Length: 66
Picture 1 (spheres, rainbow, N blue to C red):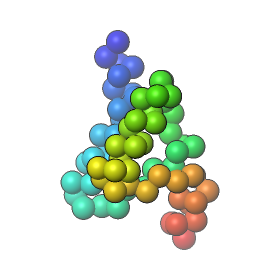
Picture 2 (cartoon, rainbow, N blue to C red):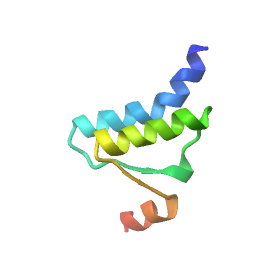
Picture 3 (cartoon, one colour):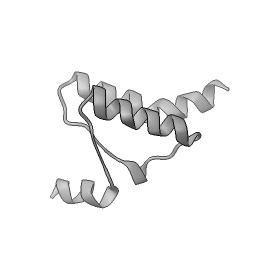
């Protein structure tokens, strides 16, 4: 099921792309979809620990844009 795997990793790869370009990465946990909750949690943990991403909620992320 390659298509399912790709959707699950979309946020991870997009965040990696931003990180290697020295952009700040913020991911609103409640604004991303997932297929398997365990893999989603693992991806968010990798983003936070390996890419110094800020994992937050959508309302906080929007406040940060103002």
